[in-house]
Length: 241
Ligand SMILES: C[S@@+](CC[C@H](N)C(=O)[O-])C[C@H]1O[C@@H](n2cnc3c(N)ncnc32)[C@H](O)[C@@H]1O
Image (tube, rainbow, N blue to C red; front, side, top):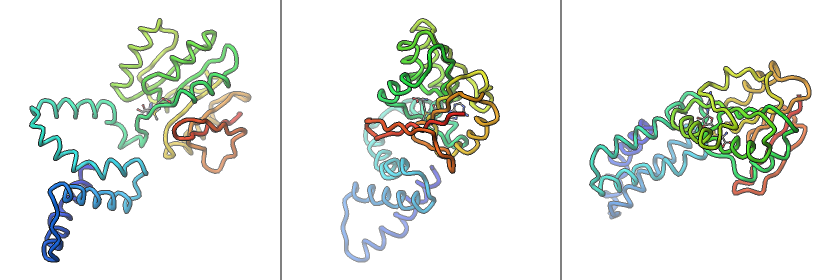
């Protein structure tokens, strides 16, 4: 990410700016910043980064310059960096960033969970899905696993404050024994889906339910697709084992 931004800045400074000056095009400071951002977008597309990198790549350099203009103390940058690291530090390896299931997804999943079911949210983020299920379907058993330190901590505190009606564990989803659950919920990314499906098939019991929000298992027909009327028009892909 940082390398890509450095490459974009270098390309803009060393190639685009002299070329623009030579052809008599005058641009403001911010137009140059956005120009460098546009180069970063182009590099991101060339590297086939997922679509959500697009706005980040476009606005990273302009954002950096805005922040510099604010004249904030360096400790703020360090604090912001630490927060980002604690939330997104593992993304380079897992390829699964933090974004949250919509309320519509919470409601839909609550309607799919059988009575007294044991449910696990693989990569539980801030624990919103589990908190909702524990409120709506208090007879069930709910577990979340999360590896990002800050989301784990916030979800854990949330669970304690809410009466600990669900459990949040700091653990990798790859280490969870899925045979202990009747419903497995995942909202991850396209990257782990094939490997996760192998784990699901190896461990989940016949008759249990695997639900993937947004990301279908490649090459496997879901038994049902639930269309959600949320902001992203998400789909829940249901696989009955
Ligand atoms: C897209 S978020 C979904 C959050 C939550 N399940 C929800 O629906 O609101 C995916 C989460 O999975 C976590 N994650 C990624 N890889 C993981 C792993 N190997 N084990 C546990 N959690 C993981 C990320 O840190 C992130 O919080």
